[in-house]
Image (spheres, rainbow, N blue to C red):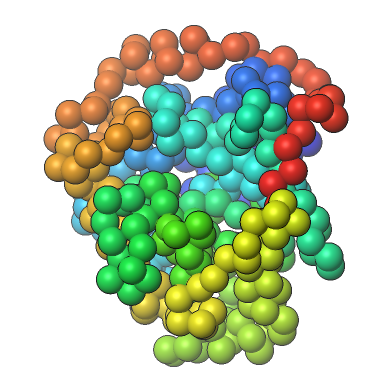
Length: 320
C-alpha cells in the first residue's frame, strides 16, 4: 500500500531519500499517525524542520541561504498529505508535538471528502509547503480575510500518484485565492520537477497559460471542486478572490514568501500561535527547540503501529 511505502521511506525523488516516515497506531483509525525522520534518523516536525526551499542546507539557517533551482526556477519542498483519487482527509496535525500526519476527525468520526461528479476524491496530489503559516490574526490585504491557521496548501498536478508522507520537489505554477467560511485559504498550483510534463510548462512569465494548454480543463475542474465540495453537506458554495482567476507564478511566490515570514514569526514567538505546536529540532534560535530524546519520547508515547485497515461505517464522516 502507499501508506506502507511511505512508512518505509521509499520515495521517488532525492528529497524523499533525505527523510523517512514511521507509522503509529492503526491505519484508518483516529489514533493513526505518520511521523517523520531526517537522514540522521532523528524524529522531526515536517511542518517546521523540513526546509521550504528544496535543496537548501539543513543546517539550522532560517531563512535558508541556498536553494535548489532549475534554470531560473526556485524549487520548493511539498509534503504530500493526500494522494490523488483518494478520499481520506489526511493532514498535518498542527496542534500536536512534531506535527505528524493524521486522519482528520469531526465529531469523533473520520473525515472523507465526498465524490463530486465527475470527480473521484481529491483530483490532485494534495498537501502543504513546510515552514509556511497562514496567520489567523493577520488580515490579508487582497482577500480582506484572516488566514486559516494552517501551512499553505498545494495542489500538485503531475501525472504520478504520490504517497502520503512523501516529500516532493515542485515548481510553482500559480495560485487560487479561496475564501473558505470567511478565511483566506490560498491554493498553490504546482508540479513535481520530475514529472514528464514539467518541462512543457515553461512559459517565461505565464505558467498558468501553459497549464491550460497542456492540461485542458484541469484548472476549471479545480475551481469547480473547491467551489462545490462542501455543498452536499448543506454548506454554501465557497467563493474566490479575483472572481476565481488563477494568479501566475510570480504572484504565487510572493504569497509563499509572505506565509514563510508569518511562520518565522511564529517559531520565534513574535506572534501568538494559540494552539499551534511549534516543537522542532532544527530551527535556529527558536524557543520551541527540543532534544532528540524529547522527540523520541513524543513518538514512543503514541500507540504502536498495528496492521489492519478496516473501518466501520459509523466511523466515517463524509466531508463535502
